[in-house]
Image (tube, rainbow, N blue to C red; front, side):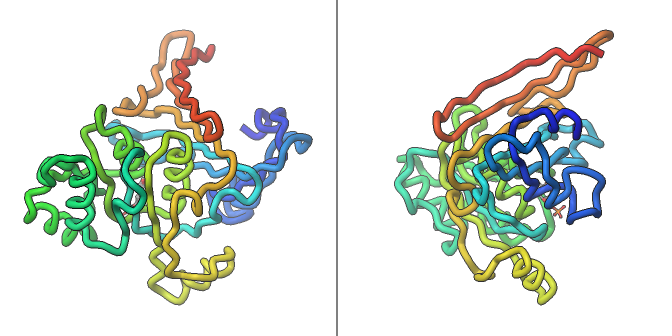
Length: 274
Ligand code: VTB
């Protein structure tokens, strides 16, 4: 990976990666990558988003990268982030993190012109979401629980016709929040996130990473700004991408590459000799 990145004409810096400086052998936060003779860019990676999904060969384990102009990606500490996301083409402010889940679903349903019991919410299946899931179910709102992988969950919320998901709700990793925001910059959609800094240690860690307001509500643009590129490759089969296929003499991969300025979405099936 290092050798390959070395040939890429960028002056890259990992801002979200495998760990703090020197604690991981490569792709660690602060590592410089690229040949150094191209544009100054910041890179966020999640080399295996959904390790448990991969271990169990379940849907939507992906390998993810986002790249932005220097300073374009929030240097998010590895803490939880409360997230809400919906697709494009809804009026700004249709949903808001400071409203209840049911209020948001009702508002989204009104904007979509359907009964709110026909709006499907995607939530990570975790004990910490018990109250949220209960609130939705009591209101008869369909809930799709996912075992892992909220980057894919958020992308699904922007692609309702294919995924059947209208809104993503709940908390997951903050780095995953930045990566999801990068994807939304390319495909459209609204998202808000707020870091959960519930201990002095987390607040200090965030402060060291330049976060001055611990209660800030981040928009898509606050999380990923300027020109942004997002790429994901399927590891296991999923609703987003096909997984890696091992053939006798080749490995087949399926990748999506998106760019914010052109809003192009490219689907690439690649054959790698082995
Ligand atoms: C979150 C989510 C990720 O792991 O980080 C989750 O953002 C971990 O949550 O998409 P828990 O600590 O509750 O297990 C993923 O689902 C996969 O990396």
